[in-house]
Image (cartoon, rainbow, N blue to C red):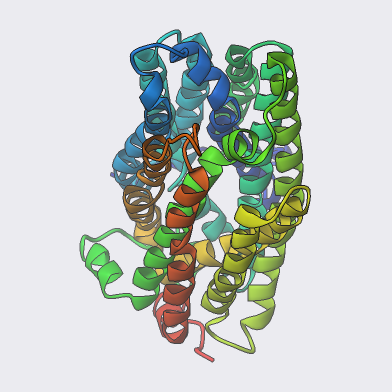
Length: 449
């Protein structure tokens, strides 16, 4: 199926969406709400759990395990359908694919607020994953077609800066709205902006595939898929991102619950508990915004700046930042509060430093003909072996370590078990360093340095 191009705009009346910056701005805004929708659930997990699994109910003893399944259900639908939507996006109008996905996940997120049973909530999270599967592998390919290789790292860093900002806003919005109204309303407030962003998608015209590469107008062949497995940079990057996603995905899903229930003193009243949780979500969200945003932008610019001097710069900054972040992560687990907040900032900064460079690697070493599919395959693997299972593992370890000494379970142990893969991710990114120049040259035609 050929790409359906939008009709040209009328001469003399330029479209307000013409040029790369409006497209990147819209994609960034969508990515922002993408992560707001994801992490509202993490912020209100405790409130949902108390309502759906009240103390004394049949499932109360396994509440953490079941709540972990909500994160897993979203990720299963997301990763399973991402290859389908990536295949579709390589052949059809990408802005339409994105618009439909944003519409679906916005409606499903609002539907989460209507849920009164675990089954309904589980179904809504599955539908959120379906919608995001249409967006995840598609959006970065548009940016790759708008900017050349030497600028992609910094531009994609701005795009992926929405991850820490959106995640933080999810914690803040979820915590504050749940405290002032209820956890149901925390989901409702995301619907209007989501629908507006979807409408704006349908107003954009398609960007020619491969426009910023050496050979624009490329066509898809099935042989391109076999090349992915023979591209060391793609393979090492996928393993590194999988290890990172396993650790960060599981930890971020439980972070507010961990701080409130396992690191802070027990509040004397339910009202005080609600206020403390709102405060923790706000504090954690604020740290995540500042540290994550600075790290994501700095990582992208640092990798681009190093590229003329060191051809494997995208791998180098990704690997070193992960190895440096692990000691700070240990500080989060064992330092007393409020000192622990300092380690939270430092750990987040290091663990988000790789976001722009690691995603730029995918753009630079894959053919424009299958770039959306390459992102989709990456999404499938990193979530299948990453955060589709780590939230449940954390929940299960916590449930199974309940004792008189730890009546709520030992979530610190669970975090430590999952967090060791931070080191693994750093090692595999460093192993990919010597391959990047050759793999990039094969696609873009730029000289290896």
